[in-house]
Amino acid sequence: DVKVTQSSRYLVKRTGEKVFLECVQDMDHENMFWYRQDPGLGLRLIYFSYDVKMKEKGDIPEGYSVSREKKERFSLILESASTNQTSMYLCASSPSTGGHRTETQYFGPGTRLLVL
Amino acid sequence: GQNIDQPTEMTATEGAIVQINCTYQTSGFNGLFWYQQHAGEAPTFLSYNVLDGLEEKGRFSSFLSRSKGYSYLLLKELQMKDSASYLCAPMDSNYQLIWGAGTKLIIKP
Image 1: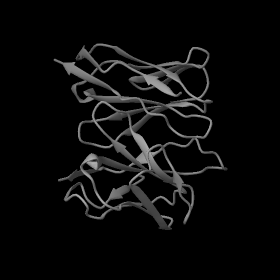
Image 2: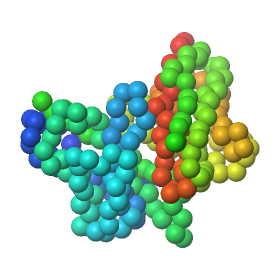
Image 3: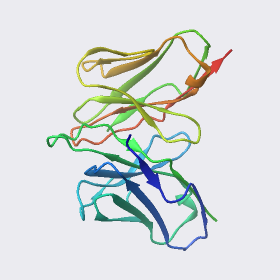
């Protein structure tokens, strides 16, 4: 079974703090994604990565950065947390089979972040 | 622009059948996914359609009409554990999933 883990289920931070959210997958997937999920809205893509050291902006990258130094690990960084970044953060991974990128995404359990 | 439309909430009775509709507009199309998400948990994969027609998988079936920009998820023999949100997500020409807000399905005994 694919396993995607996230470093924390719940996190409380103060405005202005630097926040690190870690995601690890154990299935050697090439693709990794960070989303946020807010009530009444669909998942919104923050950043994604198709390979080590590669990153691409998603729909809402402002206020976030990412790091992918190893294939299995994809980190999301909030440089200076703000209250509007209070949200559920979901990490996902998917394989690239034969160069196709239509493979299923597998999600981690999510990190519920509260910024005070 | 890209847009997904699905009902916000539906209610059904245990043992019954329910159909959750999804209409979409995307820039290009590379298939459509349905995910299930229980409250407070991560989304889990249910189905993927890339060609028109019905795909059946046990109690769950998913239908796609590309020309109409329309899909539905059909759940049969509803069980209480089917109470969850169901997310429709077409994939655009850049292979990005465009997520709907989800349909919250409430199952009553």
